[in-house]
Length: 195
Image: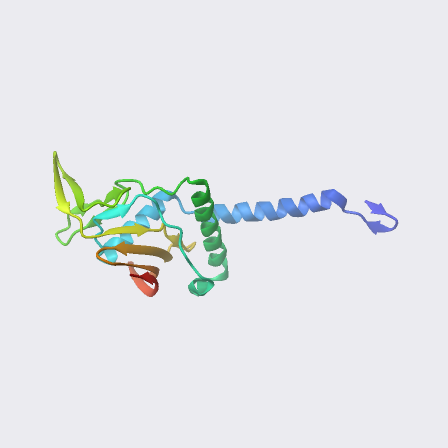
């Protein structure tokens, strides 16, 4: 519609722009969305490929403490996906929802090929329980871990994960991992803290 010889898009023009941006974001989100099962699958692959055998994992997933240089490993398109995933992590942390590690979802194989699932704990304890068949075996707990859910590239070949390890002392690092020849490899480890 023309008003005084000029095109007047008014409110409907702004609505179209907002709708276009919203549709673009939603389309992008659904293309880059990684299901919870996919994230657990990648955690399991990472633990197996890196030969990590955590016996105890803290029940709440950690929000990754990142800085922008970490994102240099990602393309522009993947950076948008990572920022979206970070936003979801922060929203879940703020709302206290969606941040619980689900027991039995994380598994790893020992050197003999036996599948284990770490105990998911909500309090620090000096012992850990392992259920084998009808028996519960109690071991002395040496360490427990706090992990983040991975931030994953759209092609599922690059991931960022923070792992904090609490033993006698403790440390926390952000791992940038790439899937090379079918196996996850650490391409960069960024120490966040140590005690």
